[in-house]
Length: 334
Image 1 (spheres, rainbow, N blue to C red):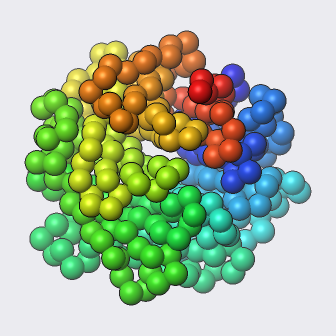
Image 2: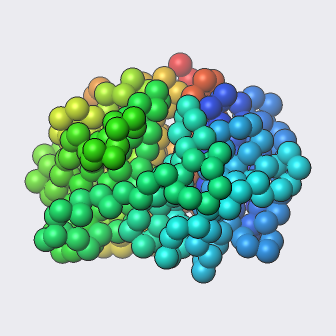
């Protein structure tokens, strides 16, 4: 267990090598954690600008860090010598999420301004591309901040957002990473009807009105997992866009089902992809079998006192990281 000063976790993720984990908290502290030894490798305090979001950089002991509100800049931080190597500016509102490529220096910044911006960390300042996902759907333009993710081979990426209007739901687009300027090769709608087919009525309603907090491809690239901040996480077929399952984590004590942000926004594929891990508002980590989504989940209590807001899994080792205000490592049971 790695304890912070009580500030929430704003970023948690493993480098591509699978050993080093970047953990950042809202008090402006970025840590590199050793997932194999369970120790802190490096700690940097970003007191001047704060940290609003963070993710691993492509190089070891590096991280991509977004300034805390009201900042809009994204910076490439070397934790080896405690220096910002590059600065990227292209958002008109705070950056609330970052999504790195597993195979290159590219990463997405995801802003409250609705923009999904692709950057190359090897280039200074100029964005590679700014995706206005679903610009053609004028009737559904109001939407929450976007989400994005690369597939494990980095040949495909997905981007999307939940809509903010009364109809709820959201939409997702898939791109060829080598020809993304040609536009998406597939677009999926995740509407209330699709959610109602795979979730109980109360869970479907929570998922439809909540924001999307994170997006992840399964290791085999065949499914996509949408993490929702209402505590309901949706599994999609990555080829057809069909909703396959919904995993509902419980709300926290004293929180009502009408509170869209009541539960945790954390879900991830376990190492190897054979399970879906999700945090709950009660501080318990739960494990679902995606091949049998209606089977009762396994509960792993004892890791956190507060809502589990982040879950990340090593791409190479059987290690799982979770965070509320504090971070913890788990050994995945094969």
